[in-house]
Amino acid sequence: MAKGQKTPRARESRGSVTRILRLIGLLILIFGIAGPIAVVAVYRFVPPPITWLMVQRTFEGRGFQRDWVPLERISPRLVRSVIAAEDARFCEHHGFEFEAMRKALEANARVKERGRGKIRGGSTISQQTAKNIFLWPQRDYVRKGLEAWFTVLIEVIWGKPRIMEVYLNSIEWGPGIYGAEAAARRNFGVSADKLSATQAARLAAIVPKPLAWKAARPGPYVKSRTGRIDRAAGTVRRQGLADCVLK
Image (cartoon, rainbow, N blue to C red):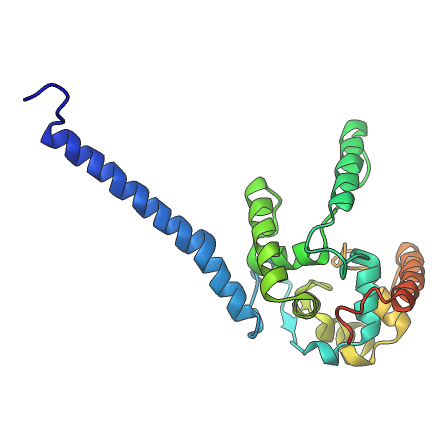
């Protein structure tokens, strides 16, 4: 055999490696790019079904109540309240609030250094929606990477009104309670479109800790937080900070 000429076995081995790499590339294309795009496109029109968190809570024995309603059947007061409480620049950013993320990282670093305090989140409503609908609840770097990818997709494919609609119909609002309609009926005995300003602010107030805080029977902290959110929701209304959602 001439010098430098590959043996049939070497050529076969190289061909196998090439086929494996192509297969890996195809799987990445399907499951990493094409698959997520297709799912997000479907959910632009179809209500997303049960989420990872809902499954987890069901196995924990917390029950399940969720009544999907379109955005126009959810009180504008609740839209303004959650924007005031969770993401004041929701209508201005494209999925990420980098200044809020920087401040959260700095605050969390101080918490770790002191060994006490509360971990602060810097996620936008878009990021929260991406996580809630498509991913698992536990924090890790893989999930954060996928969260960023899905956030980009829903911002591009869904737009702000659909993101808000899915968010308000899917977040946890108590043991086994998901979405604004179920939360409004369970806590106040009214439909989501009939929420008062105070009721809307109370629901927004408990979003960070829906299993610990109560909207119907709020403790001192939730009452105080409700007042702040109610005032901030007034600012959201006056400054048009929810105009991308409320036409």
